[in-house]
Image (cartoon, rainbow over the protein chains, first blue to last red):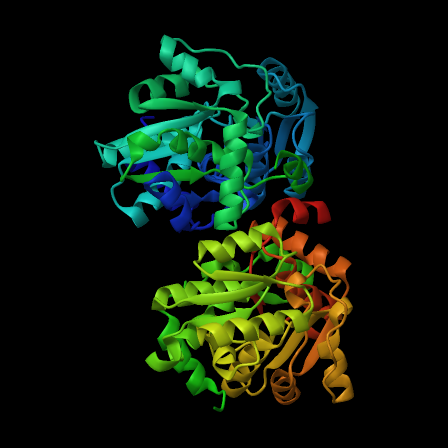
Length: 315
Length: 315
């Protein structure tokens, strides 16, 4: 399929009865601090507490009955797994999730809450993929990859659709970069609607595979999973890399310290709870103050799954 | 004056251009847990991060030019001081706030941010009142008490007005109880609009002066300020006590542990940041599960001014 605004609109019609219409919030004090007008699309208020429910629901409800009958399977550091489990539950099919031992406890608990059958693995992609293959062979479940899947990317693009419905044209839009699902879904929708918009990805320096891939014109493998932004430790795939080459203007790298500072800012000023990954685009925009001065900026707040005790140690 | 829905509506017309129309949120998982439908009026998203801006703004803009010309004054270590400073700033008059030396730095900073002229005093009430008297004598500023003031109570009642505009009739409404401003403003508006509604105050066991006052029919003095709900350490005055006798159905006592647990629940499930005082009514409703089963309940979330480090330590 070709991912475009038409397909993203179709995805939105398919999933909107299941998901929340999340609010678009602004903060005067953050605007003053950055010197730009920022619109936060708050997917921390989304079902399963992240945007991942959009792609997962679109994928699960795009399967025909034959494809769906043995359930769905994925490997995920947390949010996509919970989303897939919830979407499968809505459709009444099984969900199998392979997840790293090191995922936050709150994310592991969520997987169980939504009824997934959970298998643990190493954090590195190879280990996760090998484990996934094993469970697929045993169950015949349909693989719903967290981002190496056009239908999932279309679903993620629906957050931008809703954002722009409320804001109209923006000068910039910025999302976190993990595997590239939300980044490309947003970029494709944004660029087709507003050809002059600039699309940025905010990426942790400690997981700068997307930055290196785009810089060198060659897909870079995953880096050791060390960043505090646990949702962004994964790497792009060939599919999301090629799309990003075409649709994304720039990857902006930010340190873990900058991510934590941006997260603290959102907690303190906006009184909403977001996870470290979600703070990455704001950190990137703060770093790009000169470029965005006086402009309108959209930011996708990707989710709000945090362990409160762990966050205390960050602040 | 007589506080009634008419006066509260007038207050709302007076202040609505200045304040935020805060959202009314619900949480499916908290509803499931309590077994009732709860509507949270989220004053943690309010200007100055608490409902206090309603009463302060109503008071400041109700003054005639003669009364206003020398500014306004209050003694406060908390949210009312910041609210009064902000309201005075909107009217373009001076605000004097007497605050204890030992007040947290974050609160002193907030007072300066909103442009108050701050005078430090001893923590003891007599010292604060003496200091206030001195500054009043010097400046001629008009005293705006945080709750011993009908115009302030009318302003606080506007949160309930907005809540009911969105929910229609409810079976119960519950607010925190400190000095009794928000409790009585809410109670008077609710009872006149919906004679069958039950109005509860949620009060910390460690600050149960309102509970004792209503039980014994005699105003009880302030208890030692020990509860974690720092906004509720104060006591009712004769004015708010008499109103509560007439309009409030019950004061429900909750332990500090129950307050922290309710606060954790809101942070985790709703992904919004509320201060301990704000969690007190939810703790009271959880304690009253049997009574509210299957019913519609309104809760005023009073504010979100917290030191993140301190609160995360409570969890």
